[in-house]
Image 1: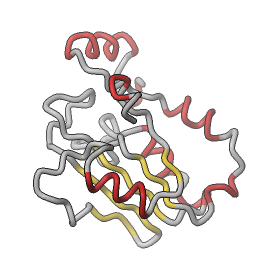
Image 2: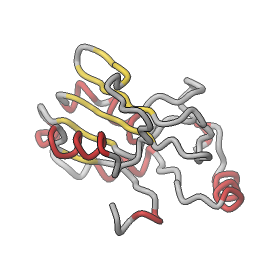
Image 3: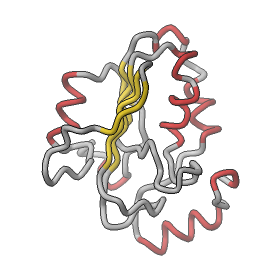
Image 4: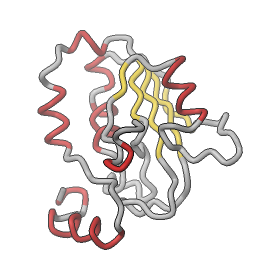
Length: 153
């Protein structure tokens, strides 16, 4: 957390103050959990992080999802086919991105912002575009959804 500009106390206080349920997942926890899976399951797969901002506004990774960072850092080692990340653009979020919904596609050829974004796209996991990606492209979904939406998710 400190490498991303947050202390544990600051993060908890921020979550209390903004009354939001979007909580930070530590890269260490993601690495430990995903290390339990054999590397071969990721080969040639499309991973969809449907609650994760892949490219933070600050570009220093403090406001970038740890899930996105993990898969970006390990893209070649895991032999991923594609990584797709979408981010809900609500009024306030934990990382202060405030830029609205965003989506990015990462492939071996490079990164692209999702350009087919429909008008009024929120980036939410249950939006039309996110559901289309989920149903038509994704092989594996890996994310930490908002707690208040756990049943819907």
